[in-house]
Length: 200
Length: 202
Image (cartoon, rainbow over all chains, first blue to last red):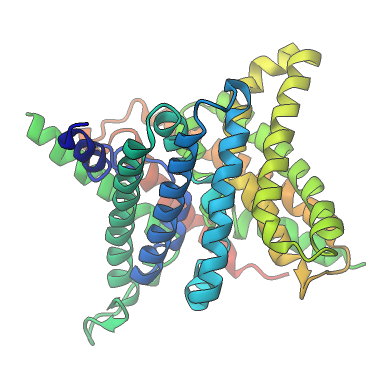
């Protein structure tokens, strides 16, 4: 198999089909946990793990599972990986696990994961699925990092926990719900603007 | 039994901790289906039904099966399986018994399986109404009430958003803000208005 093809599957998730900014999927965790960069990275890594694990598995069983019951089957596979990620996080990163709270089990209903299982790995061989999942996962993670960096800097006046400025009085609302919605709205609009501009 | 507790649950789930606008659960469908009032409200009603039933079903499973056998870590798998099969079951029943309803709700039902709000309310119930591995008093009733109110709050937000978006069709907005971005910005303003409820004390 051509190497460039695999690379293409990987790269498309980073920008062209970025799950957060271009397809606008999996928003619940994106907005809820992006209050600090650490949370954003934690969520991104957990979701990437679940994506890769479930994509490999779904791709392996794709010819065995009957068409009609495929969604419940995929969900069970995904839920298994989510449970693994949840327990792992509780054991090795209890603080992070506590601040992500219920959004770790909620990865199971993240539309990105089921969407990739349904649209990609249920039709393609495992190797391709791994690259697709990695691309999507990393695309999701960087989107989370961008959003959480903006919100942490503006809402808390810090970057990865370090204070940015002593005189800046951070507006609290960037950390609360409205700030998240505003940030993603403006980011998507900015990306649209540059895409339109490039296309002429 | 204290009636005040139940009133607090109703107010806080519908307004203060509105599922869409302050908990961000069910955002995907919020952006996707809120273009017109009709479908938006139908979706809201369907979600309300499923969140109520999901709370109704998931509580006994957690209390009578998972807790006694120390299987709490199976919460994710068991809840999502039960919800997915329940939604599928409802779809089949409605299709057979009420074709008219099926025409209204039918297309939304499969979407609800992966709606974060439904699974979220089931998880939230076990987080809030179980303390130290035991059900708090009246926990079953509280769970069901929270489930129903979560759906109502979802419907309210959907209805408001769809009303605004119908008007937006005629507004002259910059090209790059059209559709999704402007929806988020309006949602942000609505969410800010809902923040006003958070000072509410009973």
